[in-house]
Image (cartoon, rainbow, N blue to C red; front, top):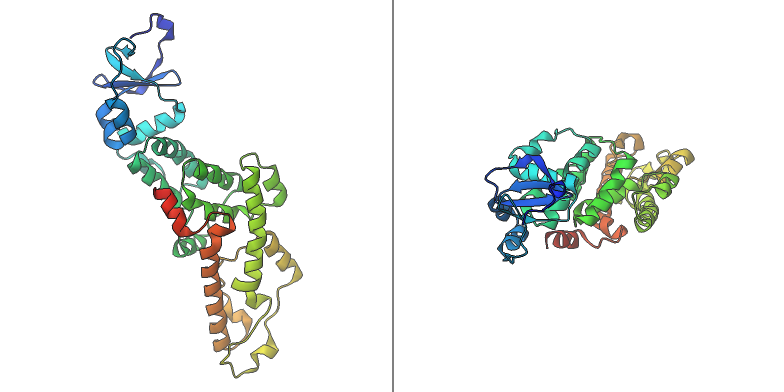
Length: 307
């Protein structure tokens, strides 16, 4: 039924008002005349919604087209319409886009596609996020090698987005990077919950302990290889300075690959022994990274995300 008061009519979307559209969706007093067939093809939630019979006496219509009132954010809904109707919409995101641009681009699409189970768009958004939030050690190594610099005010936005849209896959790395935020800055942040702030602070201490005692132990307590026949133990490499130790404690990075093996000034067997311990330590840190932030295991994360 068309409202009697013309002033009550919603505005029409200039992008998404199609004369052959079969349904009108009104979001925040903005009307989208679009196609049931397209929505139903991509979303079983919309497909089910459109199959529910509406009582004729109560049904609302505009130009004879049935009306539905989703309770969504207008900007988010507009973004998901663009992604559905424009085949190359994701190509607008530059390959070298920074994290702020990337999150701004996908967040609305991710929220709406998760709510309405639009799997193709949801997977595209997650694939974009994976470029900055690795879920494997090999992907982590590639990202570290790229020397990408994270901005604190941006990285913290990923954590509530991941929780809201059930994308726990990006949380371990998001927390890992967030532990490098200065404590005062972290505590004053208005985006993170107090629980997530506490996880960052506790995780920072855990990562530092793992860096000191497992991944980079050779910097603090060098032990020579069991097969070493040379006096490597007596010519220990220079131990970590107090200043550098404090820098690492404040901003731990146990997953960083150590490359300057020549500086140890020990025999090849001892270098190989240290390299093996270093890599095994990094693998251990990666495996336990989710549990440091109360996220269970990587396997559990994948199951939760895909359910």
